[in-house]
Image: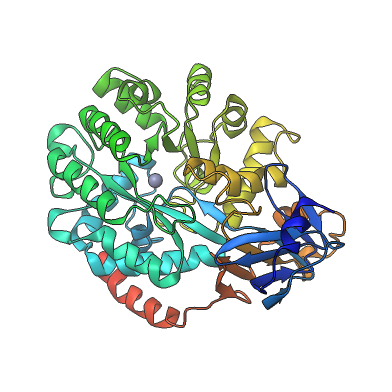
Length: 468
Ligand SMILES: [Zn+2]
């Protein structure tokens, strides 16, 4: 009898939820076990047992038939800017690389952003993510004009209403055009103000407990929007408060050139000099580290939020993900902001991670299992929650995505449902559970407010997009 069923025999009460009879359960646990005909039992928000088709299932209050389905841990999004869905595919947005693209949008965002906009952007953006199988997401919200209100509280409200596991960051910008930075003067805050707000938000919201639904990280935006001194002081504050650190890192050639011209150092050197070369931090994009920098990042255990769509749309390049994983970096997946990606489908990002990995590192260096690992375990490691999220094992949270593999796009897939899931498609998740609670049912959001929220989102988006 397996250790799983030893635990099962001690269960006397029916569990809350049993997802059963799957084509395959890809646990992504320490041993990467795959359970044919498998099942997952969730009680009080946690996985309490799981097994293969030949192993006895527990009694359950609710049973979900997953026949013909791949069952995976809920996917994890490690980098996003939810508010940017207010300016998606907006024609006056330039087609320039990162810096010109940002400069065309900063004034529109800064003028229109407020609590209502951030709440609606988060609500709709989190719904979109949930439908792509995502159960935990970060948000790098760095735009906090002094007049705009409590924007972190606004997006947290949306996550609570949708029952998404949320890791928002208190982002910041302090280096405006007048000081040699990129954002306009009215988009930035003073550094003392930023540090005080960072501490206030951590104290108010951050829950470090096992199974936590809400954790806060600190996130100066990038080397071209904050000073090295703010990076240093933020790292010290994160250490004192025991929270994680996040920022954009080595995103494109403009980023390199700015860092060398302004600070006399490459972005990864600057990252190290301001105390960020630590496993407390994870960086977004990391497209342009050189060979020596990859070794240093890996040795320190710095996490990487890999954002393949955004890196291609902004023509930043292809991140050396295989090399960084080999060097020791935890690599997670990010959809990046909705004005650069502009889609927020983690399934799509996982597929692109697989394709890019094959393209730049060799066909045998990346496959669907590695991409699924990046989208789950890798993300958990970036967020400091290995063993808790991003895997299905006894004691992990009950965050589960169920993918029905049927229809013309999957016809002919008989042998390997994981490769079939990521090579074929496109797929949206059929059912999604967070902490045992169902948030997507049959491909539809369970929260009935979606139509109302889309209407309100459109009204506010019109405020962001002045007619030319
Ligand atoms: Zn970003």
